[in-house]
Length: 512
Image (cartoon, rainbow, N blue to C red; front, side, top):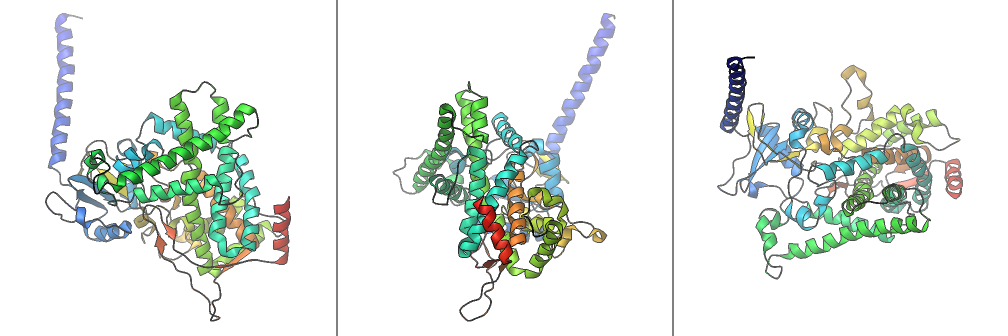
Protein backbone atom coordinates (compact mmCIF):
# COMPACT_ATOMS: atom_id res chain seq x y z
CA UNK A 1 0.00 0.00 0.00
CA UNK A 2 1.32 3.45 -0.95
CA UNK A 3 1.66 6.36 1.42
CA UNK A 4 -1.11 8.13 -0.47
CA UNK A 5 -3.43 5.17 -0.03
CA UNK A 6 -2.56 4.97 3.67
CA UNK A 7 -3.20 8.67 4.12
CA UNK A 8 -6.49 8.35 2.25
CA UNK A 9 -7.62 5.48 4.51
CA UNK A 10 -6.62 7.38 7.65
CA UNK A 11 -8.49 10.44 6.42
CA UNK A 12 -11.58 8.30 5.79
CA UNK A 13 -11.51 6.79 9.30
CA UNK A 14 -10.87 10.21 10.81
CA UNK A 15 -13.83 11.62 8.90
CA UNK A 16 -16.10 8.87 10.16
CA UNK A 17 -14.95 9.49 13.74
CA UNK A 18 -15.54 13.21 13.31
CA UNK A 19 -19.08 12.61 12.02
CA UNK A 20 -19.83 10.26 14.92
CA UNK A 21 -18.50 12.78 17.43
CA UNK A 22 -20.47 15.57 15.79
CA UNK A 23 -23.62 13.40 15.84
CA UNK A 24 -23.19 12.59 19.53
CA UNK A 25 -22.64 16.25 20.31
CA UNK A 26 -25.75 17.17 18.35
CA UNK A 27 -27.80 14.51 20.11
CA UNK A 28 -26.57 15.74 23.49
CA UNK A 29 -27.55 19.28 22.59
CA UNK A 30 -30.93 18.12 21.33
CA UNK A 31 -31.57 16.26 24.57
CA UNK A 32 -31.09 19.42 26.52
CA UNK A 33 -33.49 21.19 24.18
CA UNK A 34 -36.15 18.55 24.73
CA UNK A 35 -38.65 19.19 27.52
CA UNK A 36 -38.71 17.31 30.78
CA UNK A 37 -41.71 15.02 31.27
CA UNK A 38 -44.75 17.00 32.49
CA UNK A 39 -45.50 17.45 36.17
CA UNK A 40 -46.97 19.84 38.72
CA UNK A 41 -45.49 23.31 38.75
CA UNK A 42 -43.36 24.16 41.76
CA UNK A 43 -41.76 27.07 43.53
CA UNK A 44 -38.40 28.69 42.73
CA UNK A 45 -35.51 26.73 44.28
CA UNK A 46 -37.85 24.50 46.31
CA UNK A 47 -39.51 23.06 43.23
CA UNK A 48 -42.11 20.46 44.28
CA UNK A 49 -40.56 19.86 47.71
CA UNK A 50 -43.59 21.17 49.65
CA UNK A 51 -46.00 19.17 47.48
CA UNK A 52 -44.40 15.81 48.20
CA UNK A 53 -46.84 13.60 50.14
CA UNK A 54 -45.68 12.14 53.45
CA UNK A 55 -48.07 9.16 53.46
CA UNK A 56 -49.32 6.81 50.73
CA UNK A 57 -47.32 8.62 48.08
CA UNK A 58 -48.36 6.12 45.42
CA UNK A 59 -51.94 7.43 45.51
CA UNK A 60 -50.83 11.03 44.95
CA UNK A 61 -48.64 9.89 42.07
CA UNK A 62 -51.67 8.17 40.53
CA UNK A 63 -53.68 11.40 40.80
CA UNK A 64 -50.88 13.38 39.19
CA UNK A 65 -50.68 10.70 36.52
CA UNK A 66 -54.32 11.29 35.56
CA UNK A 67 -53.39 14.90 34.76
CA UNK A 68 -49.81 14.67 33.51
CA UNK A 69 -49.52 11.18 32.09
CA UNK A 70 -47.64 7.94 32.68
CA UNK A 71 -44.26 9.60 33.26
CA UNK A 72 -43.97 12.60 35.60
CA UNK A 73 -41.11 14.96 36.38
CA UNK A 74 -40.76 16.46 39.86
CA UNK A 75 -38.06 18.77 41.16
CA UNK A 76 -36.92 18.53 44.77
CA UNK A 77 -34.46 21.32 45.58
CA UNK A 78 -33.11 21.21 42.05
CA UNK A 79 -32.84 17.42 41.88
CA UNK A 80 -34.99 15.60 39.35
CA UNK A 81 -37.36 12.83 40.38
CA UNK A 82 -39.09 10.76 37.71
CA UNK A 83 -42.29 8.87 38.55
CA UNK A 84 -43.28 5.94 36.31
CA UNK A 85 -47.00 5.19 36.52
CA UNK A 86 -47.54 2.55 33.85
CA UNK A 87 -46.27 -0.89 32.92
CA UNK A 88 -45.08 0.01 29.43
CA UNK A 89 -42.81 2.85 30.54
CA UNK A 90 -41.46 0.79 33.46
CA UNK A 91 -40.60 -2.09 31.15
CA UNK A 92 -39.03 0.20 28.55
CA UNK A 93 -36.81 2.11 31.00
CA UNK A 94 -36.08 -0.20 33.92
CA UNK A 95 -36.07 -3.49 32.00
CA UNK A 96 -34.98 -2.79 28.42
CA UNK A 97 -32.60 0.02 29.40
CA UNK A 98 -31.54 -1.57 32.66
CA UNK A 99 -27.88 -0.76 32.05
CA UNK A 100 -28.70 2.93 32.51
CA UNK A 101 -31.14 2.54 35.39
CA UNK A 102 -29.60 -0.14 37.63
CA UNK A 103 -27.95 2.06 40.24
CA UNK A 104 -29.47 3.30 43.49
CA UNK A 105 -29.48 6.95 44.55
CA UNK A 106 -27.36 7.95 47.53
CA UNK A 107 -29.58 8.26 50.61
CA UNK A 108 -27.54 10.16 53.22
CA UNK A 109 -29.14 8.76 56.38
CA UNK A 110 -30.10 5.20 55.41
CA UNK A 111 -27.20 4.60 53.07
CA UNK A 112 -24.12 6.53 54.12
CA UNK A 113 -24.73 7.07 57.84
CA UNK A 114 -26.38 3.77 58.78
CA UNK A 115 -24.71 1.62 56.16
CA UNK A 116 -27.65 0.06 54.32
CA UNK A 117 -25.83 0.90 51.10
CA UNK A 118 -23.61 -2.10 51.90
CA UNK A 119 -26.62 -4.40 51.63
CA UNK A 120 -28.12 -5.55 48.35
CA UNK A 121 -31.36 -3.55 48.48
CA UNK A 122 -29.69 -0.10 48.57
CA UNK A 123 -26.22 -1.06 47.39
CA UNK A 124 -24.83 0.87 44.45
CA UNK A 125 -24.67 -1.14 41.25
CA UNK A 126 -21.27 -2.75 40.79
CA UNK A 127 -19.16 -5.83 41.43
CA UNK A 128 -19.98 -6.10 45.14
CA UNK A 129 -23.71 -5.90 44.55
CA UNK A 130 -23.50 -8.36 41.66
CA UNK A 131 -21.52 -10.84 43.77
CA UNK A 132 -24.09 -10.72 46.57
CA UNK A 133 -26.93 -11.35 44.13
CA UNK A 134 -25.06 -14.30 42.61
CA UNK A 135 -24.66 -15.87 46.04
CA UNK A 136 -28.39 -15.64 46.75
CA UNK A 137 -29.55 -16.78 43.31
CA UNK A 138 -27.15 -19.70 43.54
CA UNK A 139 -28.54 -20.70 46.92
CA UNK A 140 -32.05 -20.60 45.45
CA UNK A 141 -31.15 -22.49 42.27
CA UNK A 142 -33.17 -25.47 41.08
CA UNK A 143 -30.49 -27.78 42.49
CA UNK A 144 -30.90 -26.37 46.02
CA UNK A 145 -34.68 -25.95 46.14
CA UNK A 146 -35.50 -29.51 47.34
CA UNK A 147 -33.68 -28.82 50.62
CA UNK A 148 -35.60 -25.58 51.07
CA UNK A 149 -38.92 -27.29 50.28
CA UNK A 150 -38.18 -29.90 52.92
CA UNK A 151 -37.66 -27.19 55.54
CA UNK A 152 -40.83 -25.35 54.49
CA UNK A 153 -42.98 -28.47 54.59
CA UNK A 154 -41.58 -29.44 57.99
CA UNK A 155 -42.17 -26.01 59.56
CA UNK A 156 -45.62 -25.39 58.07
CA UNK A 157 -47.27 -28.18 60.08
CA UNK A 158 -46.06 -26.50 63.27
CA UNK A 159 -47.52 -23.24 61.98
CA UNK A 160 -50.91 -24.95 61.53
CA UNK A 161 -50.69 -26.35 65.05
CA UNK A 162 -49.99 -22.89 66.49
CA UNK A 163 -52.83 -21.34 64.50
CA UNK A 164 -55.31 -23.88 65.88
CA UNK A 165 -54.03 -23.50 69.44
CA UNK A 166 -53.90 -19.68 69.53
CA UNK A 167 -55.72 -18.27 66.48
CA UNK A 168 -55.87 -14.73 67.84
CA UNK A 169 -52.08 -14.55 67.55
CA UNK A 170 -52.02 -15.43 63.85
CA UNK A 171 -49.73 -12.52 62.94
CA UNK A 172 -47.22 -13.62 65.56
CA UNK A 173 -47.34 -17.19 64.23
CA UNK A 174 -46.72 -16.00 60.66
CA UNK A 175 -43.68 -14.04 61.84
CA UNK A 176 -42.38 -17.13 63.61
CA UNK A 177 -42.85 -19.36 60.55
CA UNK A 178 -41.07 -17.08 58.08
CA UNK A 179 -38.21 -16.43 60.52
CA UNK A 180 -37.91 -20.13 61.36
CA UNK A 181 -37.63 -21.19 57.71
CA UNK A 182 -35.23 -18.38 56.80
CA UNK A 183 -32.90 -18.88 59.78
CA UNK A 184 -32.90 -22.65 59.31
CA UNK A 185 -31.90 -22.36 55.66
CA UNK A 186 -29.37 -19.56 56.03
CA UNK A 187 -27.75 -20.49 59.36
CA UNK A 188 -29.15 -23.90 60.43
CA UNK A 189 -30.42 -21.98 63.44
CA UNK A 190 -33.57 -23.13 65.25
CA UNK A 191 -36.12 -20.43 66.11
CA UNK A 192 -38.50 -21.58 68.82
CA UNK A 193 -40.57 -18.40 69.09
CA UNK A 194 -40.57 -14.70 68.27
CA UNK A 195 -38.87 -13.86 71.56
CA UNK A 196 -35.68 -15.32 70.09
CA UNK A 197 -32.81 -12.85 70.41
CA UNK A 198 -31.93 -12.83 66.72
CA UNK A 199 -35.56 -12.60 65.60
CA UNK A 200 -36.15 -9.56 67.80
CA UNK A 201 -32.94 -7.96 66.59
CA UNK A 202 -33.86 -8.63 62.93
CA UNK A 203 -37.27 -7.06 63.47
CA UNK A 204 -35.67 -3.97 64.98
CA UNK A 205 -33.42 -3.72 61.92
CA UNK A 206 -36.43 -4.07 59.60
CA UNK A 207 -38.30 -1.38 61.54
CA UNK A 208 -35.27 0.89 61.35
CA UNK A 209 -35.07 0.42 57.60
CA UNK A 210 -38.75 1.08 56.99
CA UNK A 211 -38.50 4.28 59.04
CA UNK A 212 -35.34 5.81 57.63
CA UNK A 213 -36.16 5.26 53.95
CA UNK A 214 -39.37 7.27 54.32
CA UNK A 215 -39.00 10.19 51.86
CA UNK A 216 -38.70 13.57 53.52
CA UNK A 217 -38.75 12.29 57.09
CA UNK A 218 -35.22 13.49 57.85
CA UNK A 219 -33.84 16.83 56.71
CA UNK A 220 -30.39 15.34 56.14
CA UNK A 221 -31.80 13.48 53.13
CA UNK A 222 -32.84 16.82 51.64
CA UNK A 223 -29.79 18.77 52.82
CA UNK A 224 -26.91 16.24 52.87
CA UNK A 225 -24.44 18.79 54.28
CA UNK A 226 -26.22 18.44 57.64
CA UNK A 227 -24.43 15.12 58.22
CA UNK A 228 -21.24 17.12 58.83
CA UNK A 229 -22.54 19.36 61.62
CA UNK A 230 -21.78 18.44 65.28
CA UNK A 231 -24.23 16.13 66.98
CA UNK A 232 -24.72 18.48 69.94
CA UNK A 233 -26.39 21.12 67.78
CA UNK A 234 -30.21 21.47 67.69
CA UNK A 235 -31.95 19.51 64.95
CA UNK A 236 -29.40 16.71 64.82
CA UNK A 237 -31.50 13.95 66.39
CA UNK A 238 -31.01 12.05 63.14
CA UNK A 239 -27.38 11.44 64.18
CA UNK A 240 -28.46 9.48 67.24
CA UNK A 241 -30.99 7.58 65.13
CA UNK A 242 -28.26 6.72 62.63
CA UNK A 243 -25.79 5.63 65.31
CA UNK A 244 -28.25 3.28 66.99
CA UNK A 245 -29.51 1.81 63.71
CA UNK A 246 -25.97 1.32 62.39
CA UNK A 247 -24.98 -0.49 65.58
CA UNK A 248 -28.00 -2.81 65.34
CA UNK A 249 -27.55 -3.78 61.71
CA UNK A 250 -23.83 -4.39 62.23
CA UNK A 251 -24.48 -6.46 65.34
CA UNK A 252 -27.02 -8.60 63.49
CA UNK A 253 -24.65 -9.27 60.60
CA UNK A 254 -21.65 -10.00 62.84
CA UNK A 255 -23.27 -12.10 65.54
CA UNK A 256 -25.29 -14.40 63.28
CA UNK A 257 -22.21 -15.02 61.14
CA UNK A 258 -20.08 -15.70 64.21
CA UNK A 259 -22.52 -18.36 65.48
CA UNK A 260 -22.04 -20.38 62.30
CA UNK A 261 -18.31 -19.65 62.14
CA UNK A 262 -17.85 -21.06 65.64
CA UNK A 263 -19.80 -24.18 64.78
CA UNK A 264 -17.77 -24.72 61.62
CA UNK A 265 -14.55 -24.37 63.63
CA UNK A 266 -15.58 -26.96 66.24
CA UNK A 267 -17.11 -29.33 63.70
CA UNK A 268 -20.74 -29.05 64.86
CA UNK A 269 -22.12 -26.93 62.00
CA UNK A 270 -25.04 -28.35 60.04
CA UNK A 271 -25.35 -27.58 56.34
CA UNK A 272 -26.63 -24.07 55.62
CA UNK A 273 -26.10 -21.17 53.25
CA UNK A 274 -23.69 -19.46 55.62
CA UNK A 275 -21.82 -22.63 56.59
CA UNK A 276 -21.29 -23.41 52.90
CA UNK A 277 -19.80 -19.94 52.36
CA UNK A 278 -17.43 -20.32 55.31
CA UNK A 279 -16.33 -23.87 54.53
CA UNK A 280 -15.97 -23.18 50.82
CA UNK A 281 -13.80 -20.10 51.34
CA UNK A 282 -11.28 -20.86 54.12
CA UNK A 283 -8.79 -18.26 52.79
CA UNK A 284 -11.36 -15.49 52.34
CA UNK A 285 -10.27 -11.87 52.47
CA UNK A 286 -11.83 -9.35 54.88
CA UNK A 287 -13.73 -7.89 51.92
CA UNK A 288 -15.11 -11.33 50.98
CA UNK A 289 -16.10 -12.04 54.56
CA UNK A 290 -17.97 -8.73 54.73
CA UNK A 291 -19.89 -9.65 51.56
CA UNK A 292 -20.75 -13.05 53.09
CA UNK A 293 -22.02 -11.39 56.28
CA UNK A 294 -24.16 -8.79 54.58
CA UNK A 295 -25.54 -11.26 52.04
CA UNK A 296 -26.44 -13.80 54.74
CA UNK A 297 -28.20 -11.10 56.73
CA UNK A 298 -30.03 -9.80 53.68
CA UNK A 299 -31.19 -13.32 52.87
CA UNK A 300 -33.29 -13.68 56.01
CA UNK A 301 -33.82 -10.18 57.41
CA UNK A 302 -34.96 -8.45 54.22
CA UNK A 303 -37.35 -11.22 53.21
CA UNK A 304 -39.12 -11.88 56.50
CA UNK A 305 -41.09 -8.63 56.81
CA UNK A 306 -42.15 -8.61 53.16
CA UNK A 307 -43.32 -12.23 53.14
CA UNK A 308 -45.26 -11.81 56.38
CA UNK A 309 -47.06 -8.84 54.82
CA UNK A 310 -48.17 -10.93 51.83
CA UNK A 311 -49.35 -13.73 54.11
CA UNK A 312 -51.35 -11.21 56.16
CA UNK A 313 -52.99 -10.10 52.92
CA UNK A 314 -53.89 -13.73 52.20
CA UNK A 315 -55.54 -14.05 55.63
CA UNK A 316 -57.46 -10.83 55.03
CA UNK A 317 -58.62 -12.03 51.60
CA UNK A 318 -59.88 -15.31 53.06
CA UNK A 319 -61.68 -13.46 55.85
CA UNK A 320 -63.45 -11.15 53.40
CA UNK A 321 -64.21 -13.70 50.68
CA UNK A 322 -65.47 -17.05 52.01
CA UNK A 323 -66.70 -18.04 48.54
CA UNK A 324 -63.16 -17.74 47.14
CA UNK A 325 -61.86 -19.80 50.04
CA UNK A 326 -64.42 -22.52 49.31
CA UNK A 327 -63.48 -22.60 45.62
CA UNK A 328 -59.78 -22.93 46.48
CA UNK A 329 -60.50 -25.63 49.07
CA UNK A 330 -62.51 -27.60 46.52
CA UNK A 331 -59.55 -27.59 44.12
CA UNK A 332 -57.16 -28.67 46.89
CA UNK A 333 -59.51 -31.47 47.97
CA UNK A 334 -59.88 -32.70 44.41
CA UNK A 335 -56.16 -32.69 43.60
CA UNK A 336 -54.62 -33.70 46.94
CA UNK A 337 -57.40 -35.45 48.81
CA UNK A 338 -57.66 -35.71 52.56
CA UNK A 339 -55.18 -38.50 53.34
CA UNK A 340 -52.04 -36.33 53.23
CA UNK A 341 -50.84 -32.76 53.60
CA UNK A 342 -49.92 -30.65 50.55
CA UNK A 343 -46.39 -30.39 49.20
CA UNK A 344 -44.67 -27.74 47.11
CA UNK A 345 -44.58 -30.25 44.25
CA UNK A 346 -48.41 -30.11 44.07
CA UNK A 347 -48.31 -26.53 42.85
CA UNK A 348 -48.51 -27.09 39.05
CA UNK A 349 -51.83 -28.94 39.48
CA UNK A 350 -53.52 -26.14 41.45
CA UNK A 351 -54.21 -23.29 38.99
CA UNK A 352 -56.96 -21.64 41.06
CA UNK A 353 -54.77 -21.62 44.17
CA UNK A 354 -51.97 -20.21 42.02
CA UNK A 355 -54.30 -17.42 40.91
CA UNK A 356 -55.21 -16.74 44.54
CA UNK A 357 -51.54 -16.37 45.46
CA UNK A 358 -50.99 -14.00 42.56
CA UNK A 359 -53.86 -11.89 43.88
CA UNK A 360 -52.20 -11.80 47.31
CA UNK A 361 -49.14 -10.22 45.69
CA UNK A 362 -51.23 -7.84 43.55
CA UNK A 363 -54.12 -6.71 45.75
CA UNK A 364 -51.97 -5.18 48.49
CA UNK A 365 -48.41 -4.99 47.12
CA UNK A 366 -45.73 -5.09 49.80
CA UNK A 367 -43.75 -2.33 48.08
CA UNK A 368 -46.36 0.01 46.55
CA UNK A 369 -43.41 2.04 45.29
CA UNK A 370 -40.41 0.05 44.12
CA UNK A 371 -37.12 1.00 45.72
CA UNK A 372 -35.72 3.96 43.76
CA UNK A 373 -33.48 3.57 40.74
CA UNK A 374 -30.83 6.07 39.67
CA UNK A 375 -30.16 7.20 36.11
CA UNK A 376 -26.45 7.51 35.45
CA UNK A 377 -26.60 9.46 32.17
CA UNK A 378 -29.01 11.55 30.11
CA UNK A 379 -31.79 9.63 28.38
CA UNK A 380 -34.71 10.36 26.07
CA UNK A 381 -38.15 8.74 26.18
CA UNK A 382 -40.99 9.60 23.81
CA UNK A 383 -39.62 13.06 23.16
CA UNK A 384 -38.86 13.86 26.79
CA UNK A 385 -35.43 14.54 28.24
CA UNK A 386 -34.73 12.49 31.37
CA UNK A 387 -31.70 14.15 32.96
CA UNK A 388 -28.72 12.29 34.35
CA UNK A 389 -28.65 11.88 38.14
CA UNK A 390 -32.44 11.57 38.30
CA UNK A 391 -34.06 9.42 40.96
CA UNK A 392 -36.53 7.14 39.17
CA UNK A 393 -39.44 5.60 41.06
CA UNK A 394 -41.73 2.92 39.67
CA UNK A 395 -45.27 3.17 41.03
CA UNK A 396 -45.97 -0.56 41.30
CA UNK A 397 -49.28 0.06 43.04
CA UNK A 398 -50.51 2.03 40.01
CA UNK A 399 -49.58 -0.80 37.65
CA UNK A 400 -51.10 -3.52 39.83
CA UNK A 401 -54.36 -1.53 40.04
CA UNK A 402 -54.45 -0.45 36.40
CA UNK A 403 -57.90 -1.48 35.05
CA UNK A 404 -56.49 -1.88 31.54
CA UNK A 405 -54.24 -4.66 32.88
CA UNK A 406 -56.40 -5.94 35.75
CA UNK A 407 -60.13 -5.30 35.18
CA UNK A 408 -61.94 -4.60 38.46
CA UNK A 409 -58.56 -4.03 40.09
CA UNK A 410 -59.88 -3.64 43.64
CA UNK A 411 -61.67 -6.99 43.55
CA UNK A 412 -59.99 -10.28 44.48
CA UNK A 413 -60.43 -12.44 41.37
CA UNK A 414 -58.17 -15.52 41.17
CA UNK A 415 -59.88 -16.48 37.91
CA UNK A 416 -58.48 -13.37 36.21
CA UNK A 417 -55.37 -15.46 35.48
CA UNK A 418 -57.41 -18.32 34.01
CA UNK A 419 -59.87 -16.65 31.59
CA UNK A 420 -58.45 -17.21 28.14
CA UNK A 421 -61.31 -15.58 26.26
CA UNK A 422 -60.44 -12.09 27.53
CA UNK A 423 -56.69 -12.56 27.57
CA UNK A 424 -54.83 -13.42 30.72
CA UNK A 425 -54.00 -10.67 33.18
CA UNK A 426 -50.20 -10.35 33.52
CA UNK A 427 -48.47 -12.13 36.37
CA UNK A 428 -48.30 -9.50 39.16
CA UNK A 429 -45.02 -10.96 40.39
CA UNK A 430 -43.46 -9.24 37.38
CA UNK A 431 -44.23 -5.93 39.12
CA UNK A 432 -44.14 -6.87 42.81
CA UNK A 433 -40.46 -7.83 43.19
CA UNK A 434 -38.65 -4.93 41.55
CA UNK A 435 -37.34 -4.42 38.05
CA UNK A 436 -34.45 -5.01 35.70
CA UNK A 437 -31.13 -5.84 37.29
CA UNK A 438 -32.54 -4.85 40.70
CA UNK A 439 -35.30 -7.45 40.84
CA UNK A 440 -35.37 -9.13 44.27
CA UNK A 441 -33.10 -12.21 44.17
CA UNK A 442 -35.07 -13.77 47.03
CA UNK A 443 -38.30 -13.97 45.02
CA UNK A 444 -38.31 -17.81 44.78
CA UNK A 445 -38.13 -18.11 48.58
CA UNK A 446 -40.96 -15.62 49.20
CA UNK A 447 -43.12 -17.20 46.51
CA UNK A 448 -42.61 -20.70 47.94
CA UNK A 449 -43.38 -19.60 51.50
CA UNK A 450 -46.65 -17.95 50.50
CA UNK A 451 -47.70 -21.02 48.50
CA UNK A 452 -46.98 -23.64 51.16
CA UNK A 453 -48.76 -21.64 53.87
CA UNK A 454 -51.77 -20.87 51.67
CA UNK A 455 -52.26 -24.39 50.35
CA UNK A 456 -51.80 -26.04 53.77
CA UNK A 457 -54.31 -23.65 55.34
CA UNK A 458 -56.79 -24.35 52.54
CA UNK A 459 -56.35 -28.10 53.08
CA UNK A 460 -56.76 -28.07 56.87
CA UNK A 461 -58.26 -24.82 58.22
CA UNK A 462 -61.12 -22.38 57.76
CA UNK A 463 -60.57 -18.62 58.08
CA UNK A 464 -63.67 -16.51 58.66
CA UNK A 465 -65.01 -13.30 60.11
CA UNK A 466 -65.23 -13.46 63.92
CA UNK A 467 -68.49 -12.97 65.78
CA UNK A 468 -68.59 -9.89 68.03
CA UNK A 469 -70.12 -9.50 71.47
CA UNK A 470 -73.37 -8.39 69.80
CA UNK A 471 -73.61 -11.65 67.93
CA UNK A 472 -72.86 -10.05 64.56
CA UNK A 473 -69.97 -10.72 62.23
CA UNK A 474 -67.03 -8.35 62.67
CA UNK A 475 -66.01 -7.00 59.26
CA UNK A 476 -62.23 -6.64 58.99
CA UNK A 477 -60.46 -3.35 58.55
CA UNK A 478 -59.01 -3.20 55.03
CA UNK A 479 -56.74 -0.21 55.51
CA UNK A 480 -52.97 -0.49 55.07
CA UNK A 481 -50.15 0.76 57.26
CA UNK A 482 -46.53 1.56 56.59
CA UNK A 483 -44.61 3.83 54.26
CA UNK A 484 -41.86 2.08 52.34
CA UNK A 485 -43.39 -1.32 53.12
CA UNK A 486 -47.15 -1.85 53.33
CA UNK A 487 -48.95 -4.16 55.77
CA UNK A 488 -52.69 -4.75 56.11
CA UNK A 489 -53.98 -2.75 59.06
CA UNK A 490 -55.13 -4.46 62.28
CA UNK A 491 -57.96 -6.93 61.71
CA UNK A 492 -59.44 -9.97 63.46
CA UNK A 493 -60.29 -13.34 61.99
CA UNK A 494 -61.57 -16.67 63.28
CA UNK A 495 -59.44 -19.75 62.56
CA UNK A 496 -60.50 -23.36 63.10
CA UNK A 497 -59.69 -26.81 61.76
CA UNK A 498 -61.88 -27.86 58.83
CA UNK A 499 -62.56 -31.20 60.50
CA UNK A 500 -61.54 -33.42 63.39
CA UNK A 501 -59.58 -35.52 60.90
CA UNK A 502 -57.66 -32.45 59.66
CA UNK A 503 -56.76 -31.49 63.23
CA UNK A 504 -55.55 -35.03 63.99
CA UNK A 505 -53.50 -34.99 60.79
CA UNK A 506 -51.78 -31.75 61.85
CA UNK A 507 -51.18 -33.01 65.38
CA UNK A 508 -49.64 -36.22 64.10
CA UNK A 509 -47.42 -34.45 61.55
CA UNK A 510 -46.24 -31.92 64.14
CA UNK A 511 -45.27 -34.64 66.59
CA UNK A 512 -43.13 -36.56 64.09
